[in-house]
Each structure stands twice: as C-alpha cells, then as structure tokens.
Length: 307
Length: 251
Image (cartoon, rainbow over all chains, first blue to last red):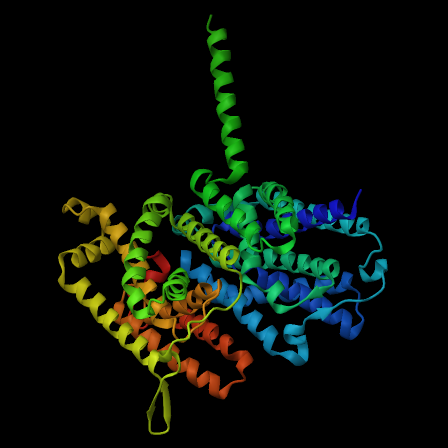
C-alpha cells in the first residue's frame, strides 16, 4: 500500500479521533466549542516540550498533556460554562486565541512562531516509527479508545444525565441534576482525550507551531466533521471523517497548492448544506431513513397478518 | 472583507476613489445581505441557534476561501494621496484617512441610533427584537423586519470597507481578524445596545493603543481576549447591555 494511501488513512483516523473527543462534550451536552484546538494544542506542546527538554517518552508525555488539558478545561469551564449558546462558543474561541498568542509570545518556552521540531530517531519507546504502519496502529488504538469511552458514556448514568442537560438544561436542573460538576467533568474528559490526540499529532507530523495547532480553523474542522457525520452519536465523527478527510487530502493535492482554499470551500458548503438539510448529520439521516423503512415493513406485516 | 475588496477593485480597475466607491459598495452589501438572509439565515433561524452558528461559520469560511482562491493571499493596498496625509496637532500625528473613518463611524452610529429610535421601521425592529410573537400580532411583518435588520447590519459593516481601505491592506483573512475584535467590542459594550457598541469600540481602541505601548507586541492580541474573558466572567451582558441575556440567549 502506498505511503500516500497510508497517510490518508492515518489522517482520517486522527481526524475522526479528535472529532470524537470533541463530540464527547459538544455532542451530548449540546454546547458548541469552537476552541477545542486549545486542548489538542496543549497536549501537543506539553508532550513535545517534555520530550525535547527532558527526554521524556511521549507515551508518558501523552498522559501529562492530557492532565494539563483537563486542568485547563476545568479552569476555563468554571468560568464559561454558565454562559449559554453563542456566548459560550465565543468564550471558547477567545480561550483558544489566548493560548495561541501566548504560545507565540512566550518564545523562551515554546520557540514562538518558529515552532518545535521532533527529530528523534524511530523507536517504539519514543513513539516514532520507521514505516507509517506503526502510526496507523497507534491511531487506530487511540480512535478505538475514544470510541469506547463514548459508547461507555452513552450507556452510563453520566451520559444519560448529560443528554438530559443537552436537551433542556433548566428542566434538568429542576429535576435535581447537578449540572455544573457534570458539565465540567465532561469537558475535562473531552479535553484530556483531545490532548492525547494532540500528542499523536505532534509525533506524526513532527512539527508544531502555534498557528497550526491552536488555530480556529483547526477547531472549526473538528466541529465540522462531527456535525456532518452526526453529533451525539459515537460513530458520527468517524463517518464524518471518512467522508471529509480523504476529500480534503485529495483536494489539497490537486493542482499542487494553486487551489489554496478549495478544500475549505467544499468543507464550508457541505457544512451549510448538512446543517440546513440534514440536521442530525449523515448518521441521523441514515437512522431516520432506516426507521422509515422499518415502519413501512411493519405496516406491511400488519396488513398481511390482518388477513 | 468583501467590501474592502470591492473598494480595492473599484479603485484598481476604474480609478474610483474609495469614498465615492462607497456609494456602490454599501447598497450592494445591503442587497447581498438580503439575499443571504433569504437563502441562508431565514431557514437557519427557524432551526435554532446552533444551526445559525454553523451556517454563519460556514458562510464565513466559504467567503474567505473564495476570496483566497480568486485573489490569492497577497496583501493589497490602495495608495492614494490621502493614504499618507497626516494631520499634525502639536506632537501628535493623526493619519487623515483614519480621522475621516472616525467621522464616518460617528455619523453611522448616530444615524443608526436615530433610525432605531425615531423611524417606524426602527421601532418595528426594536419591537421584533423584544418580542417577535406579539410584534407579529401587532401586524409587523417579521420576515421583512428580520431581513432588513440583517441587510442593514451587512451594509454597515460594508461601510467600514471603503472607510478603511486607504490605510488598511486587504487580504482574505482581514474580515476574520476584525470580526474577532468586533465580538469583543460587542460583549464589552453589551448586546442590543448601539451606544454600548460605541463605548465598547472606544474602550477597545484605547486598550489596544496602551497595550501596544506597555506590553511586548507579541502579547497585544492576548490582551483583547483576556479582556473578553474577564468581561464574560464579571459582567457578561456588557456595560450597557440587557442583563441576563447571556444566560437565556438573546430572546
């Protein structure tokens, strides 16, 4: 299998995993964060700095990044989670931008706009692989992890309460649901997993800089993939990524950079169309279609049985 | 962004001075706003606030990248004599174009405020904002009011294009850059308040100037967003805004 094909698969898995982490919070609690790149960025920078400065293996750095991201989530969440709708979204944008400008400015720590490059030789212990297959396995593993967490969350009482809050927060509160701690917990979980994906990103791409990991554009693409696939379902992000990532890789390769923004134009158009016509994403549309089919079959069976 | 490009191209291709080009750009923006409202915003509004968010995000992404595709990422500027004309008041240098832009902003703000307070349509807009259901019962055409409000907003934003084009370069991302600041200004001043927006703008401008002086330039942008977050914590409805709007949404 060609390197190009492997690369596309890895990118698809990575995007799906990041989107799934986003979905854990935004899909179930229903508040839209357009600043999740902050958490993946934190993960990427923490693990990479630990690797470059202290020779700490990214396998450990990954967890450190996740922890820092979770703490950041708790901090920012306690400030912003009582805001509704667009205000919360704006706050997440602001948060990501603060981190981006800080990363740019604190040159002594992060090398600013120059970014950090990883050139450790390939070794399992340092999460660097000779062939892309190694990365593929790790990406698959991380995606499986996040999906497992999502499914567990869906079936747990925690998830049940989150969905109640997502549907109508005030009613949930009236019924005695303790919304703030639940929301904070969910955001922290989502942030931690996003941070882990940030570490993987850094290890795969081997170069990070504030404008690529903390950018709003990254956050938007995460959100886009999940929305297109279907928010609030475990496999929505996967479906969304399967559709959008190979498309965007193909578009970016087309005409070698002449059509600089083309893939984003397609993303944006698909987003607008899906949001207006398929509000529950492709996943939701498929579920709706399947239910319609079953209803028709049921009717047929009843008609036959009534004879 | 589109308005600035419009202004740029009008000058580049037909030597139309930006302040005159204004007469073309602003009404064009109004019409564009009506089309966008009819095609995208009306269905989006019916489906709820997160749909609106994504539709506008998508539109912004779409327009920015179409501009990128058509006109590339280069910075374009209009160089007219006005661009380098400075007013000297003692030890202070003020670019004349900036002063004129300020004048335009002041007139536009006063004009908007007067429009909302004193005209029939203005009152209809305010009524619809307060209580769409009752407004409709009173005979106001909600759809038309919403369309006009949106288009008006588009036109006002477009005013900034020609006003700034003598001194500010245009590139595809310029709109996103300004929108970020605009959000902060509106939250600062308070949603739903025109004097609030004005106040927010002044405050942000002053903060920008002082931050640039006291802080290393790398952190200048951080200041904006920190101010924003602080505002959200302390007084989310803004200085002159409607209290509680931040928790129950804008309705």
